[in-house]
Length: 257
Image (cartoon, rainbow, N blue to C red; front, top):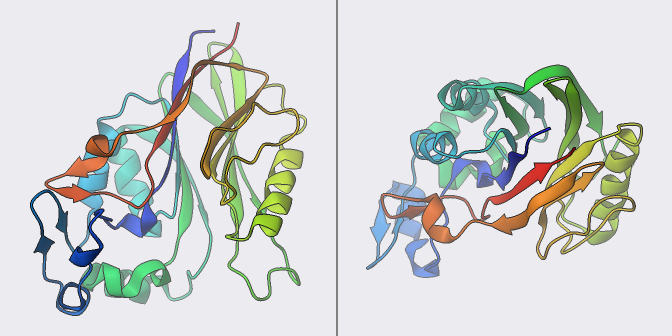
């Protein structure tokens, strides 16, 4: 089986995040004014075109995205020429109203627009199964955001791999429990990739590959890394002076025999 490239990225609900804090002004937040310094811009508008440009230009075959505006799933899949599997996460009541408000002022609405985890699969891989797992069911979820893992099985040339895409709770103890549940869900898979925002720095799961530094991880079991996971440099997610997301994409090359 040849090698393939996997990418994971938290999209920050489709917003930009320049390194200069002074660009996050009240004028920008309330009046949607663009702020600039010598190197970066901070904009308060819909950035679907910019995120689509970066993702479509990537050379990945499997792409795992978190904090994706729910209505972006179709356009991103179309632009990237990929099959897709989406699971809704938190704050998705009254979706039409949330979408309209977020389109008017993304920075003011923020995560209240709603969210999803989105898995994109490019040819020659093909999706053979789609499922989802609620990682924090009631009553444990009563005072926390809903967290769901997207599970996809994909096949290629007679081989199959299972792909888990999750965004864990921003609490180290809870995040470890959720990551454990995700790992248990794919325990029977011979070959597996578990990706996403674990919200726990350098946290590993038994029987999976060792993690890299940071909270965005690509963990594998039953396959090997041809090239270890590494974060993109900022320039690769910079478009028209804007730095997309507060997370850097993490990419790896994976192979098995």
